[in-house]
Each structure stands twice: as C-alpha cells, then as structure tokens.
Image (cartoon, rainbow, N blue to C red; front, top):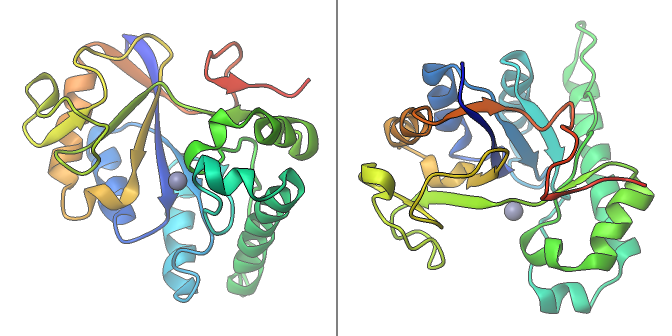
Length: 226
Ligand SMILES: [Zn+2]
C-alpha cells in the first residue's frame, strides 16, 4: 500500500461496537491501534477476552486508556493527582493480565502488556499527567490530530459527510496530513461496519495505514519518554 501514512486509533473498547470495527478493518485489510478500558465488558469476561484476543490475532496494536476512563474533563484532572491516575493505568493492566490468566485454561495465553498510553478526555492538555505517563509508566503518550465519528454524534466534529462519505463526520474538511493520528471510538460504529469501511476506502485514496506499536519515532502528537 502506498500513500501518506496515518494511524487509525479506536478508544474506549472493547465494547458493543468493537466487533463491527474489527469486521470493517478485516474487510479493508488495515491495522489499527485500540486504546482499552478494562471496566467495559468487565462483567462479561468471556466476551471481553475474545474481542481482545481477536485484536491480537488479527495484528492490531493495543494501548492503555486507564481502567475506568476517569477523570475525563480538565476539571476532573484538576481535582485528582497524577499518582491516582497512574494507579488507574496500572489497574487497567492488572485487570487485563488477570483476564488472560483466568481464561487461559490449557493454552497459556498471556496479555502482551502496553507499549503506549492515552489519557482519557482532556488529559492530553494536562502536562503534568502526560509527564506522569512518560516518566512513571515509561511509555509514550499518544494524542491525536484528526477525529472521525458518525454524523451528529459529537458536537465538535462539524464536517458532516466528510469528503462525500455520507454519514461520517470529520474535524477538518480536508484529508489528514501525513503521519496524523486519527481518533475514532468503537461504540460509534455499532451496526455501521459498512460506513466505517467506506471511510477507510476514502482515506485509502491518499493514505496508507500503520499501527502505533512499535511506536513510530518523531510523531508530533506523541510525547516520548526521556
Ligand atoms: Zn476515551
């Protein structure tokens, strides 16, 4: 595949939209990075395990998005501490580690761990929290450059029917730039795998797709450990 590389990322899964996202990626033969929150589907561990296993088997990358997606707003971040949020990211890893151990039965499955993280919500605007990720978790922190959702889903994603893809909205009218990180959310694509595949096909006119693991060097929206 040729074209300017971009990075598809999907946040907050696995959840009710994840199987449609995986199917769209399969249909278009592209790889993505999933930023996981273990609280989702925690009560249906079999389903949680099988979706994450599928991500791994099909060659997608995983990122740490914290256990419970809290805090999320600047106000929320201002009323907690980096060490509390670190605990939340550690918990996320521990929960998924034990999910894999408990489910492994005879086959010795092991959760591969996280090589990249993303703070929920406004976290990327909170320098002391981004600093905690790179210094204490010792992995890069990934922000994003461009966001997509289905039309009308999120108020700040204003360009509806982006580039003629009916039903999909983007934060900018034009195509992403080379090496942009693209943010999407699993739950927006529930029942909409064709729509997501249409978006990917449109992006293919100018872009190729890469994963955030191994973490590519020199990306403008990634903060790297010192
Ligand atoms: Zn999120």
